[in-house]
Image 1: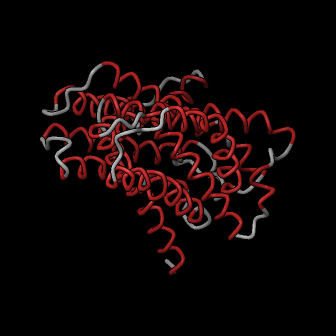
Image 2: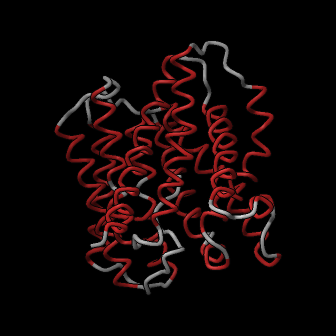
Length: 310
């Protein structure tokens, strides 16, 4: 393994870690301030859009590319990817955090690769294999242990519904942009999606402006927007040329683990055997899904990410 390969793997590890921490920081904001989920989504997308445009410019990609709609034949798909996929993932995830917890939201959203695997099997009208059945049972059982039995995790139906919606939207979000990634570099496509997503969220940023934020609160908002969004996206996207999809999927399982560990450390969740087993089952199901998908379809090019980009 070359030095560049090790740096790429470290970038993916850092991105997954930052994504996991950002959910916990968002939970603290929802618990201690009047910040709403949609306002945090708006601030996160708008700030990240500006930073990603600047990052693309530093990478010598002309700014006009970040504000264009790309190839005419793919513009409809880009709009769906940005306005339904990107915004849908952000909104459902943070609504799940606001009504439940970061651990629950992250675990539920992280079952999206299992949903993609299940959808592929049903779409092909194939009988699921034994490993696919085991994967689904492990994922459902793991989530059930965390949201249903763990002490301190009294999760209501609303939180579970938003979490499951987040998983479904994330699955669609990862399936929809494949032609976009084949036509143009992934960093350009993702930056474009953020710019488009920022437009309808601008009024939300103004109308839902929080009134109870102090210095600590603003620092947490900045962390979610910069260290929890723009930075991990940049780290992940720059690593795609060196890290294959299988590695990214497996390394990405750090995210729910980080969310659980940080939540317990900050007193936002109670450590328990059932939580540990639940997190382990979900992580194992995602790793098994990655291995199963590699065995069932051709390898993607390095420019086509499979990992959920949140």
